[in-house]
Length: 293
Image (cartoon, rainbow, N blue to C red; front, side, top):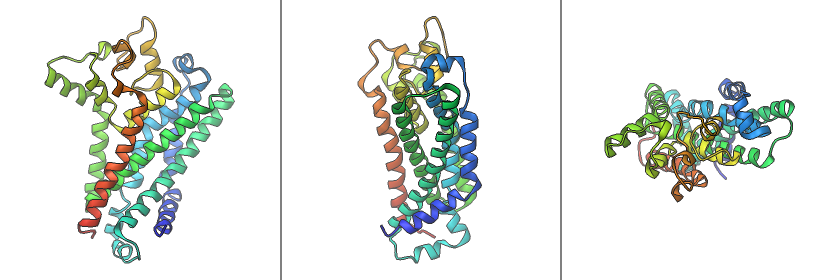
């Protein structure tokens, strides 16, 4: 592949930066949160749950911060002219940039996952290999989705401040996604949404899992076999415990029989792939057809 040298250069840039390893450290430090609720829910697989906890909070932020300057940085320094002078098409340049950033972020996050696995192995003993490997793949899918979003932001903006504002706006929307979805649902249907007793509405539950981190949690909860929800695994398990009321949207708590087919956790893979494909397709169109300078 002609763009592989560019990808290697980008991955080295990420891996030699402090940002990637700060991200990995934060995932480990935040993720290792042993609780009785977590242990009761999944036993020794709480080690896999540590990965979910750390990744859910810090991977979207970290991957965006690492990737949103992939092209805007070249424009700011003027090196975009050199880049466009390489014997590569603009599509190849974009692929090299995105894949290199993904490899850098992916390597850092795999290192964090292995560190948490080592800590969990020492603290709790052996855990399930299949849930661990599945969660690792899901984590890399989430990383690729966030890098794709970051590259798109970098492609559509011309100034670093504008790109940073776009990243902040995205993070703000995802942070308040549950409130946004429930407010829109109530405005459209007239039905108030109480997360303690959520309505059995397929569209509502579908919308709640359409963000990359929501889809990631649904997928990893499925791998941990705790329930069908975009919440963290220990919250889902607590919600489904007899006689417990928790502020959380869990399919099994709202529906009889598991809910409609489109809420199956496996379809979260499709959601993550869409978050990879659509931003990259938009970035390619803008970068190849617009003014790259």
